[in-house]
Picture 1 (cartoon, rainbow, N blue to C red):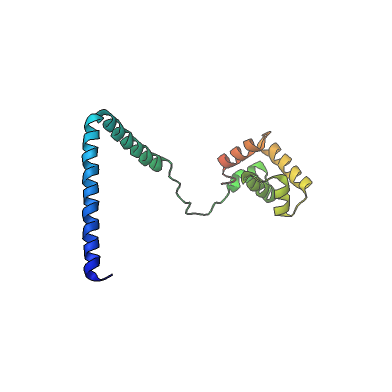
Picture 2: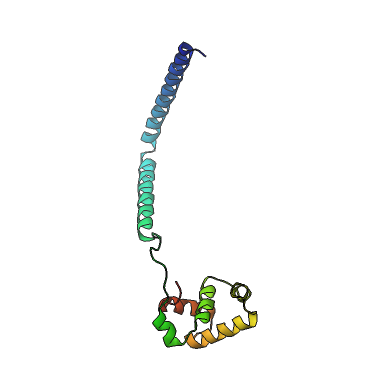
Length: 142
């Protein structure tokens, strides 16, 4: 295509687009007058949606941790939790099963069960979820 032909095509394309936009605008004007209450309700809904998203992003912002987690050594020593038991507790908090913990730490599943049972005794809990929650409250795991 030559430059002259390209300019002509662009001019006609722009004119057709402007005409389509104008027709849509006129149609909107008629629709907006006949359904004014619907338009107002929709605008209010969009405004509250935007406000809800903004507030949600402000309140539930996940900021990356700047520092490496260091366990609360005082709580660990006062409860008598060994370093191996703390590692097991960390893997419990990560949602690992006994078999996965055993494979990751190079232990037998029975040894992991023993560590978990001793953790339950030391933390005075009866369930994994209770142990994890208490460990997080005490700063033993992130």
